[in-house]
Image (cartoon, rainbow, N blue to C red; front, side, top):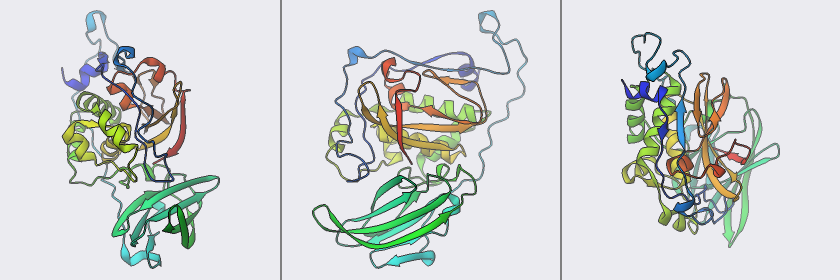
Length: 344
């Protein structure tokens, strides 16, 4: 029996490991400096959780045998790889910061910065505000347009002293996405990968062993849970680090990470295979942990993970940090203890 078929009938018991606080996107304004989160909890309080994938086509007969005849295996076919890039020829701005707004319908903007001082970009839409650290070394960055259609206002800022910034320019842009999934199918500064990334190659290998998108989600879930452990030392360091961003292939190579790393890695692997995936930041009760997790979209049904049932035609929650490290079920609950704040 293939691994994917085994997963359709058997619960995957996850490792009972240490789980602690989480690292958020550590820009000086976008996330709190204490992005390492709360102090880690004791191993003694942790219990195992399981992932169960339910087969919607074949019922299990007594003893675990299938009552239906399995059709010939046809591997999952990922759609065309969707990239994102900054194009200088389309850029507009003043001196230190330039914006490429040519691809807003595809759910992202490109930003370039060059200054001896820190640079920031504020993004406003409705009552939502996102604040980004712009690289000041002459390199570019990609930021998502994650709030859907509407009028976005972009405000570039340059640091003048301490925490004071001066405005460089402001640009309004009317955004109409090709579809709601565009921002969550492409690389960005928060989920940074390309076709040559090792995590993308790994995702393609895992996907080749599955029949559908839901199977790919399960395979990525299982791989990350089995191969990445929580990095307590890194969580402490990130508390005092400004502008921390995950490097997806480093997380794979070291096999360690904080919640930001888990969520970014999962998002990159799934997006590269054409599965819309959000990286979510917010608070998790009962301990008010500032945390990062994922939500993925699929039209398929039948997969249940740590009490979250996958629903057809809707976004579904995927929390690899807690699942991989055997968090107590009180952290997971029925989803009502998760407070979504920002999407990337």
